Structures are given as C-alpha cells and as structure tokens.
Amino acid sequence: MAGNLDLVRRTYEAFARGDGETVLAGFAENIEWIEPDGYFAGAGGVRGRDAVGEIFAEYPKFWSEFSVTPERFLEAGDEWVIVTGSQRGIARATGNEFRGRFANVWRIRDGQAVRLEVYTDTALMWKAFGSLPPDPE
Image (cartoon, rainbow, N blue to C red; front, top):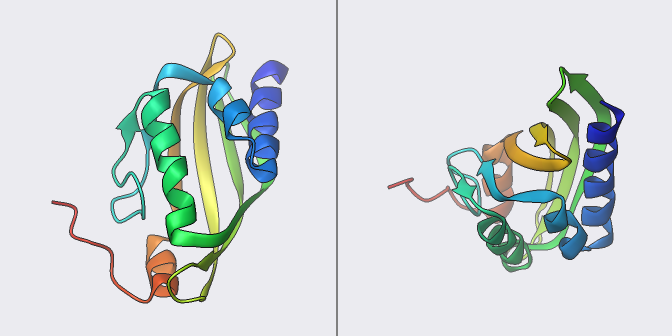
C-alpha cells in the first residue's frame, strides 16, 4: 500500500532531520522493536514506543555522528515494507568511523508501525567502538 511506503519514507526523513518526535509518532504504542544481539543499545529488542525512545536517547552516548541512508523500499504484501541501505557513524569514544549495510523489515497496521526488525553488521559497529560487544546475559 502506498500509505505504508509513505509512512516509512517519512520516518527515515524525520530521523535524518533529528526529529525524534515525528519518528515516534509513526509507531504504535506497543511497537515491537527487534535488534540483533550485540547491538549497541536495546540489544535483542524492546516493546513499546517509550522503550524505542530510550534507545534513540542512547545514540549520542555512542556516536558523535550517525546516519542511515535508505536506498531501496520494497512492499511485501499489505502490511510489510522492507528497506535496505547504508549506515555511517563516528564512534564517540574512539573517533573511528563505522560504515555498513542494513535491512529493516517493517510491519504496518492502521497507519502505524507495529514491528520493526533491524539487520546490520554489529561486528563492524563494535570494531569502530574499539571493543567487543557485552555478553547478552
């Protein structure tokens, strides 16, 4: 559905502007946010718009710069949008640059994101941080 694609595109545009309020407004109150184990914040995932906001609040602690550049938006049925693209960041603690690819799988219902699953190379992120990820215990 074109509306789903529009919502996802607007969300990336808002993230690029640093407009977290608009990003979060597109998420359902009980959104399921899934991240890889070893991700720098929210590893494994969280549930709820407020919890996602807490993850976003962690970004400046880890990154002096961070950007996500979506390149391809793919509709997959009535509820799903898949986005692929590139990411770039400068690790705050080391000044090292991170560059990597991502794929995000969105599920949209009633005009809001109800699920987002993040796929990225966490080893490249931790290389930029100059350390290994913490154990997921």
